[in-house]
Length: 71
Image 1 (cartoon, one colour):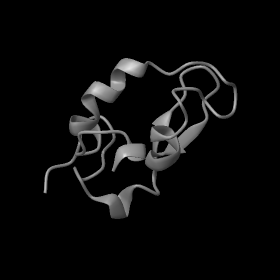
Image 2: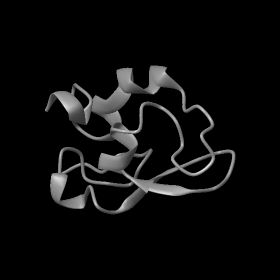
Image 3: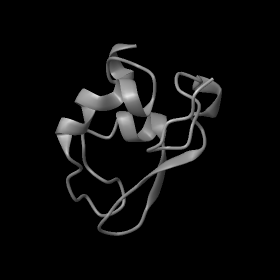
Image 4: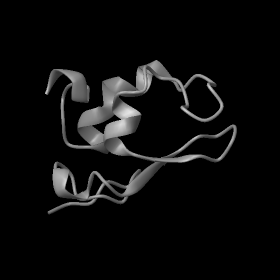
C-alpha cells in the first residue's frame, strides 16, 4: 500500500491514525489524525487557525474524502 508523501502514513489505514502526523506551524504541537480532523481548524494548544482548505486534500493525506465528523 502506498504511503502519503505528506504524512508518511499508509493511505486509508485507520489503524495508523493514532500516530502523530500533523504539526502546528506556530507552536509545534503534534496531532494525530482524528484530533486534527475534529479540531474545527484550530490548534488545540495555541488556538491558531489551520488552513481549512486542506480538507480538500484529505484523500491524498489520509485516504478519505470527508472530515472525520462525516465518516
